[in-house]
Length: 484
Image (tube, rainbow, N blue to C red; front, side, top):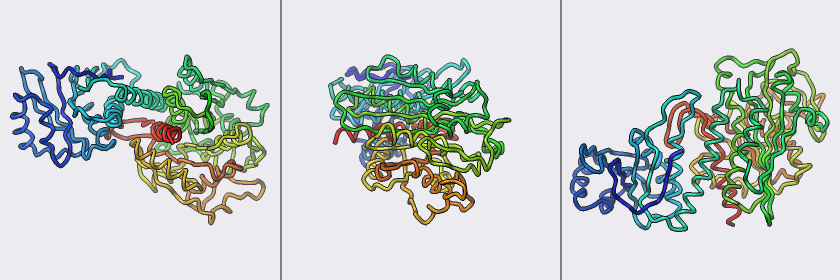
């Protein structure tokens, strides 16, 4: 992770960057000393730098100090623009040892936070080999480290550390990423933070306490790769609200008996992206000491093909008593989520219930690679979550919870069925999960984030591979809730 700090010293022998607003990019030249201003003025005019968010122009200066000048656009200077500039600079300066960034002296903490988030997120790398990391290790933002700016940098660090963990968990190949391995990583990440506790429920506990859907999904993988239910709790003193976050944790998804084709299976190590996100958001909230009680539930299982795998036509009784007929073994995520959500409602009694899941391919068909589908009956909750997503740099779109389709999930033998052939796959999955919300139906939100959990190539602050989608949205929403 990059070492980013605030310091007033403006000299450097390496690369130096200047942030450039749109509309009047030449106003940024006052940040340079008089000797460099004329050269930079001619350069900006020649390259026609517009200051658009994330645009970067590089002026090499061999044998001089600094050795190169980078001009990074921040657009109108909103969070998105500063974050884009940070991401672009991380890529443009990746071959340099150090980078110093000149910003206006009145730059607010919110801008510094976004700049640092972009720098950190775009410099993320995941590798199981001994590849040499990028040379860029140190970034200095040329501002005095006052209380507001120091807090902003700490906030960025907490969110990025949690997002990095979520990316690492999701990127890890599934030959290593068993449910037990995942649980161990959560225990390790939470260790030493006052107020954080972790409980790992193993198959015996799940069997004795009626978590039959989690067991059913995981039984085809065998005992060594058996399911778990992880409960991570943040309980600060004086907290008046309790939020439960539930994340789908399928550590690999073959589709089971209804086996996936290769194209649909080869990236299924990402099918626990929802669990990684809710764990990450809870860890970030604890690092920031947010005054809200949070419980993150991660139902973990591997949906494998084996002699004991669940079959189409099997019936499962969820925690709490709802019965479900399994008509498609590849619709397993909603099964494990149902157990965890029913447990949350019956035992934890939260004020708000939110679940995240890499749930359906239909989400990607409807909204593409960057935008998650959001479902909620609460206009207020949906609006607040959408605002948090926008502020944090993620994208959601609220979808309808149409009652016209509710009858489609009713079973002949059971209360509900886990799959239909009528289309509207993302909506029907949301309606299925709604059955487990009980009295929290009006205080529940569901995110179907299958496609946004993975980037096929680098884009802005995203790098190729797992994105950690949801950590930033949930953390920002929790911040907004506690600030209100």
